[in-house]
Amino acid sequence: MEDYKFLFKIVLVGNAGVGKTCLVRRFTQGLFPPGQGATIGVDFMIKTVEVDGDKIKLQIWDTAGQERFRSITQSYYRSAHALILVYDISCQPTFDCLPDWLREIQEYANCKVLKILVGNKTDREDREIPTQIGEEFAKQHDMYFLETSAKEAENVERLFYEIAAELIDQARRKDGTSAANKNSMDAIGLGSLGTKASQNSCCSGFNSNSNQCTS
Ligand SMILES: Nc1nc2c(ncn2[C@@H]2O[C@H](COP(=O)(O)OP(=O)(O)OP(=O)(O)O)[C@@H](O)[C@H]2O)c(=O)[nH]1
Image 1 (spheres, protein in one colour):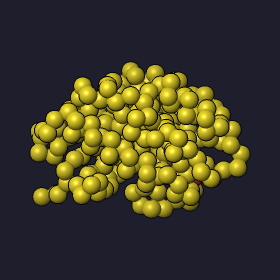
Image 2 (image 1 turned 90 degrees about the vertical axis):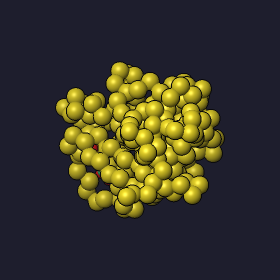
Image 3 (image 1 turned 60 degrees about the horizontal axis):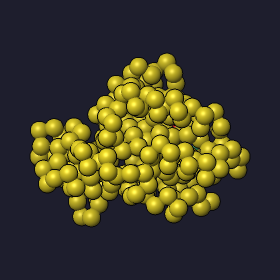
Image 4 (image 1 turned 135 degrees about the horizontal axis):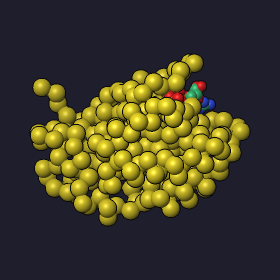
């Protein structure tokens, strides 16, 4: 029998080419794939992490950013415990599309889902979106915020570990028999995010100041 305490489902969304697949592969495989092709539909990977001595299984779903896959990818939102919305800090249109992504999330995801805004590609020198702009957008929309580089492995581990820690916290705050606990029938349901999640306002867990890009 597998030995883990919680199973959480994390879904990455955002425009094509922002680096969702690279973030997932950096975290799960420790590499930056050369010539990464566009995702077709949805991919998923699993990684078990240890937080405070507990084994946590993360099921990470990497969705295709291309419009033509939208109806497939939407169906994965519903059961997500956390949604990572990614834009490319060197590509303004990927930031301008964020309101559209939020509408999708609002329509298809559970309203208690943990939302994280990620500005990826901090290694690039042609930045178009200042950190502060991303941070403000996240605050306005009740999301955590972090800037990353899948290429340089900056903040990638931190992103997933902080999500895991926050989800564990929510599960524990709800009660001792969270639905995300593997002993429960609904192992990947949304019970762990329960009603207490709404009290968990923006940026309370991730310290937004210390999450700024350091490169
Ligand atoms: N410089 C830099 N390039 C990156 C980074 N992350 C991804 N890329 C590049 O961006 C391109 C797209 O990366 P993907 O991970 O395929 O993007 P995606 O968001 O999964 O794209 P779709 O699957 O089409 O939705 C690739 O050429 C990557 O090499 C990063 O942190 N820094």
